[in-house]
Length: 298
Image 1 (cartoon, one colour):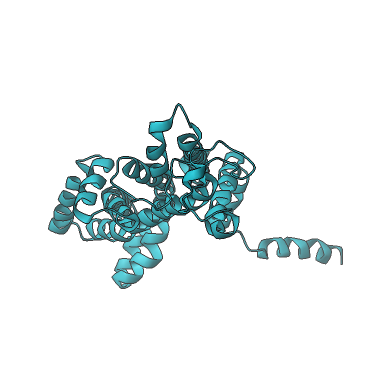
Image 2 (cartoon, rainbow, N blue to C red):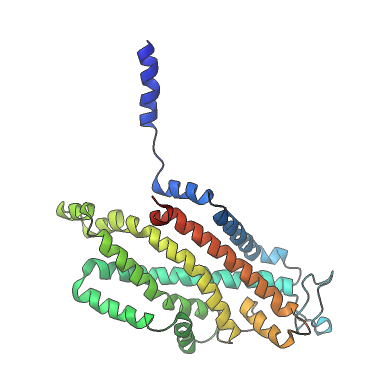
């Protein structure tokens, strides 16, 4: 009887399911304070963007020249700009533009760069050589210069900013994926799957992609903050979002001529941009530490 009592818990413990890699990564991510702080900041900006119509006290493009460049007050908590537009309202709607550019351009870069990297890494030979020469051409120029060149062809507007930045991200994503594929496809389990006659599509979906997902997600997380910064830079230079659309880079550019008389016009969106970038970078670092075993010392 005593032996049965001792054996039952041991068997139960052995039968308990082990958490998967993504669940373990989530536990590691939650254990990092910087990741939680960054995630909280990003969620706050996401909430502000989603609920902008509810939170904004005024329409973002409503002009009132009688209230031009008013300092923060009870009527306008963060003041007004040179057109009498409420800065708080434009700040909420500007979060929409910033996050749309950040996540939209990275999604586009992934959608094009990942298949190119997979094709180059798996096929090899002339296909790899040709695709990598195209990627080298994209990587030959800084991303901002590349985005400006695409904007010169595509024209101004929020959608074109997303498209231009997404195309400029294709090269980095493709090169990263190719390098990871070359490592994974040489592993024994991939060779065994091929020898067993597993179709190439299943090899990619079941063996290659799951093993390169972590570095792809890490780079994507870091690219979001870069995309937001570049998108704001394009708008600041007059090559991105056009007035009267609410955009932080555009707001900073419009207020630079009044920096001594009304510093809140440029200061408020500049601070919001800095806080969002800090939050995204903290979250990206936490994601890297959770998903990359090399940074954890595993």
